[in-house]
Length: 75
Length: 273
Image (cartoon, one colour):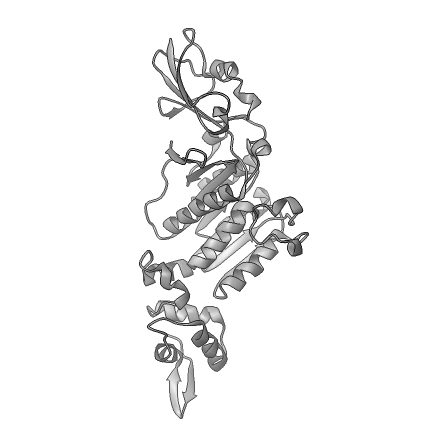
């Protein structure tokens, strides 16, 4: 299935800003996080699918748009 | 109205009348304020309050016009803000709120300035290293604006024992650097129905939210990206400016953030979630 993956902030470095990518049916959001090795950069801050906050166990559907932001905590 | 009089060339003059008779192009100058303090034996804050209440603008706020009306300036003067964390964000938020004229500030941090703070933290200098950040901030803000009342709390915010601090203020500023404590503070503010302004930074990036809990911005446990990307001065100032704007909007009942905002100073983007 086709998923539009959007990365933000440090997650973009060495990767991409937005890409249409193919995943097997019923892939979870976590599977994308793992595939892109995002946790080597930073723990996950924000996860949205189609503009709504969802959990990493969310099952993706054809045409979904996923947005991933790293955790930002400095003061 | 203040019942304060003095005799001027044999005439009894009320304090407010004295202020009105000594305006500088329609504004209350520092000189007139200091003169009135001597003549009427009162403090700076009393005079500024009386002037603002009567619609007289202290000259220091001239360039706040017409972003702020004199009535709004008086509202800010009567407002109280609690800033939790006096490092990067807290130091600059404190200065911006002091300069714009928020009358009462409580600043809380148990940390002392260290050498690695000098890249970004307001009022950290070689001379203030080793001093409590909250105490340096209080002294610095009162030096900038003597009309302010600033209370410093030189210990780390402890939700269980310090929650009462939220009760007396209008807005709470999250200038902490610990995601877990940020989430706890946000939830505490929700429970107490208190206006809350969140901000956080990492490298070129920042995030903001007002009057909401924060779990949806901190999905996973562990250190934030700032542990690798650092905290550069420009991101700190940018984030503190947005937080200060939010505080003023909340205090003046203006429209404010209703969705989290992500700031990207690499691409120069502001993304509303």
